[in-house]
Length: 203
Image (cartoon, rainbow, N blue to C red; front, side, top):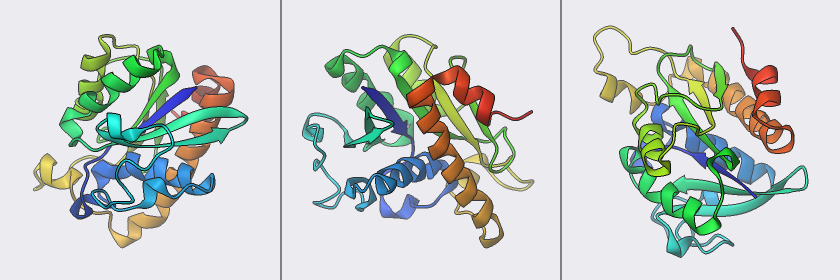
């Protein structure tokens, strides 16, 4: 089994913000697979503890799908972004999976809007959710798929920028990026991180 974690903040006020693009990718994957669990509002009865794999044990929304014949567990932490490791550490321990079978999908300020970048390991690059997952895993070899949200514009505080919603003109770029990220997840599941990097990373 593979685990795909989309990072974001729970709560309706954070929906469709830059920081929640990881949530959008796992929701896209769930919808494409015909699952509805991850599209329910966080905190609703349907959106909490309804997945097939016993999400009541974890601080996350979970649902199982199949990609290319492989079982994939989609995860949206119910912790806030900076505490994502509190959800993912127990999942790795419960399923006894190596971190190589985990893919973290998150936003990245250092990449242009819509650009994808996969890596098998490395630093968090300042992404607090990824940083906390690395801490919980105890190793830096955590595969990650970063999606560019663009640099903080002049006059903005970074905390405000990442929690802002995409502008209407940005929406087509973001929608394409989410679809491409979902496709990249599929390649990672079926062919591995190197194949996904070769296909979806751009200079």
